[in-house]
Length: 431
Image 1 (cartoon, rainbow, N blue to C red):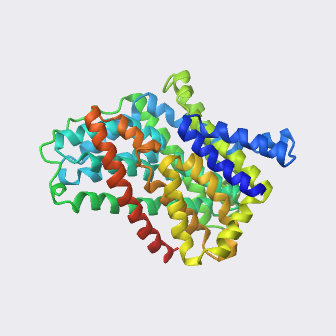
Image 2 (tube, rainbow, N blue to C red):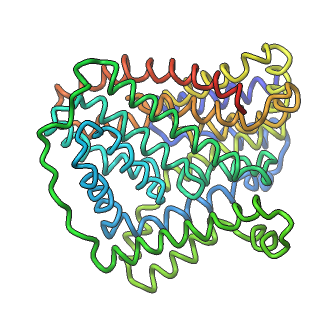
Image 3 (cartoon, rainbow, N blue to C red):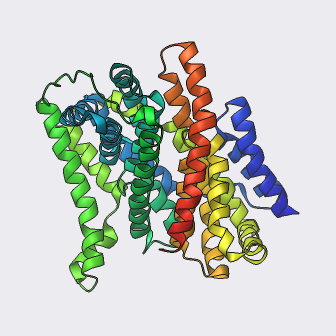
């Protein structure tokens, strides 16, 4: 009965948040407090300690550092340079948009930031080139997701943190790298289908005028070099440890390497170099996302304490055919993400199921993690989700917005769900 109550609370938190627009994390904290303290007998201190400090710190610190590049225009100018570099191949315009969004997100801008400043540029380019705006929306959406999945970017660091909490700290970096690679392959498949299957979309990109962007100024060059330096430092030791597991000094440093703390060091350097105003950089930290992820994390911690997660895993392992589990978790992730955030709701709710489910069924935990993430991201373009809503907000007129709403809902989402189910079935034979 207790487990059922907690499951109902999780669903209710998502539904109430969606209906009222109140941050889901705040609602989840209320449920965690009421159920944890007054039903389960946890002390108030135990409930407060359920706040996922590490996850919150990583999101805070990484976004703090990359906000310098956002504020001083480095990210915007890099995107324009990437698009300009593809000017001689107009037919590949959707892939150029995807590449630009992927690189900018991979450099640490994060999914929401990339969509927010790339969507208006993309729709303008679509207008000039007579390209279907749905293709542009799909390209920039999946580019922001692919780049965000990179191990040092916004989504990737959350995946690693949640996997660490699920007990996979030794494999979390490698698991996230595989998810990053799989998301790129899937995105290219989706964009290719939208680009080449409809005959009218096969000739696009002609007639567009590419204006040469100004070169990076001194501050932007310094900021870009700092971003590259941080990525190299954060990636070098985990990769070196995989290649040379017996090296004592690499093992020593790798155990002490933390992307959040490294980001704080680089933020301090950026402040010393005066790369952007401190107050403006801090104001752009995604506090709403932090509250959402941390609040849901508290409720999930209460669920773990109550044994709900183990019970759900045991039920799925004993009642679902083993072959169907990757498909089921793909569809669950897709359905949840249709209305909510992948990192804020879907992954914190489903990742804790993986260890017990993997042990019960023998399915690779990496496969289940990948199905959850890729399934959720397949519907991130839904007009009810954050990505789709940001794209809709960039459409200039009400008439076009209504048209785009219908196409996102009735074309993009069903196609992406169908493709991700097929993709993850194939992935189950590989992982």
